[in-house]
Length: 130
Image (tube, rainbow, N blue to C red):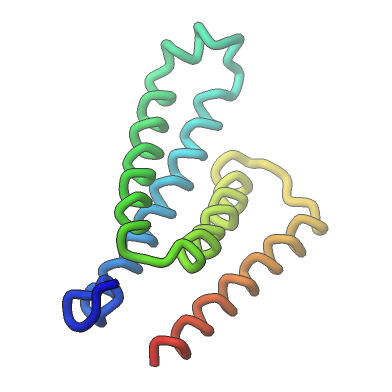
């Protein structure tokens, strides 16, 4: 394990790692939304293969995945993976706002629980790092 200034979780690297995690989450969520929008109304795989939005969605999602791999080099998986749950919230909200999908009240409770869990995760992390 590395120690000192070059450690992946030293202060400058920690901020960069969290920024990469955030960008990764945003790109993956956007990719999911683009893929869903492109898939709507498609008759089958052959039609999907001709839709530019599918390739844009795959590129955006793939970029997020590459950044995710960079995050895994820098962050503990036990922290990064639960933090990536923000993606669930973003996709859910994006599906409602952008795609016009209905949000049943029971699912809002589930999203609130995920948000609370993410808050606990980041709060605990800050206390641990202090």
